[in-house]
Amino acid sequence: MAMAQGSRVSLPRGVGSSFEVYVNGVRQQEGADFDREGGELVFRRRLAKEGKLGFWRWTSLFFGIAGTYRQNDSVDVVYETGGRRVVATGLPIIPAETGEEPVDPDAPRTEEDRPGT
Image 1: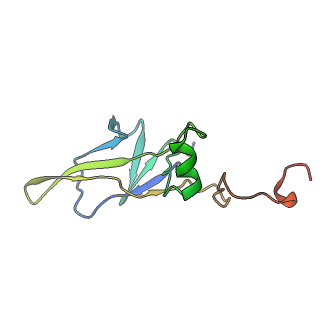
Image 2 (image 1 turned 30 degrees about the vertical axis):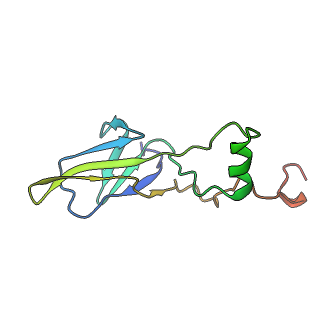
């Protein structure tokens, strides 16, 4: 049975077979939380980066109009190269391949975009 593919993260050059992976500071276990496929880590759950806050989003957060932040995961990998310990932080997250385009929840919606129309 094939595992549903989750989010992917490309490993930095020089990562051998011994490394540690952290998501939001929490250690992840290979085989339980992610799998290594060549030079990538494939996570079993969806990870996401919030991205840059626009002026209105930032302003609404600042004034307490919008009280929540979007999902903003950080993936860090700790490994050894050249006899020294290296920490690669905030690695780029490649969204899960769902066959659908990513949706911006703040994007204006048209009549064609609304369900049931």
